[in-house]
Length: 167
Image 1 (cartoon, rainbow, N blue to C red):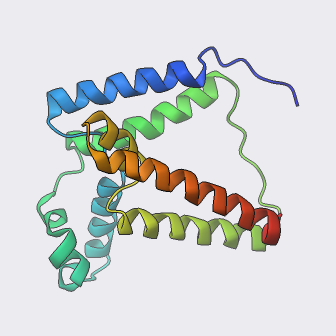
Image 2 (image 1 turned 120 degrees about the vertical axis):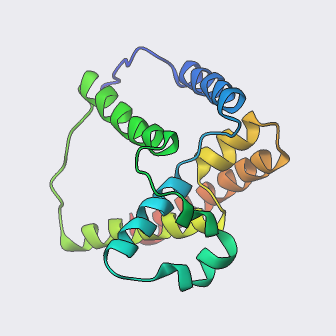
């Protein structure tokens, strides 16, 4: 496999992202978050579809503030949209954007199931690796380092599982 030079090493990219996150924390007062915003988007769609998620225990106990965020043009939402578009533009710029044909319905369902598990895990952890790891470490919180260690262990166990049962 030919190695593609993307211009920046992972270390340089990580340092830049870390510095930007610290600047965000200093100017905005909170670290970079993604899954909370995706929860807001999901809440909005549930309400559009006529459901009443405000009756669900999660929204009453864990995340009641989702019902007070009414605008899709908040800086949190724009930051997430910018992150998604930035990733797309970077992939396009470096000719790394290659949509692939889905090989089988089973692979498609496995991808959907994996995405659901990732979303469920992010809600159980009250945030994703951006908010918990990057945001936690940038705000000098112990939970960021604990999350990082747990992430390494979980990744290792996931690789073992994939090698044994899937690949």
